[in-house]
Length: 148
Image 1 (cartoon, rainbow, N blue to C red):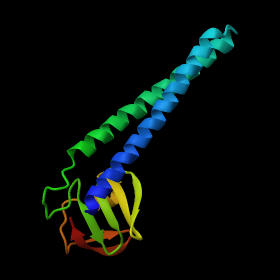
Image 2 (cartoon, rainbow, N blue to C red):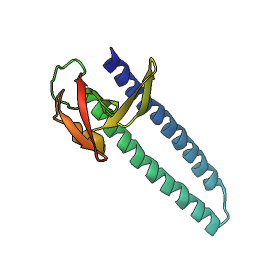
Image 3 (cartoon, helix red, strand yellow):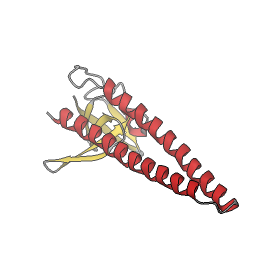
């Protein structure tokens, strides 16, 4: 089933991002440790402050990652719905979409599926619509050909 593969793709995307953030965090901890050993006065304080700023940015990214994980946990791919909602697979005359999180493009059997968040402009246009409905995106009219 395509939706299962799409959800798995989104989860893998989140886990890969989590691994990258963990690696960055470990690197910052190491930098902080080496800054603590240095005693070059003002330069030392500046280095520590920069590492701490990076740690704060990283903490923000980790918070966003947890919010993304939370969204993925809410997705029920087996729940039937004629209306487009979180977790919907949508085919339009323009492209194929999976309304979940922003995770890029999933390719299978030569077809591209765009994993997008509910806040994406195209998702905003699609939410609540059904098969057969039309919508205007970038000045062009498109039709929804399938909702899963």
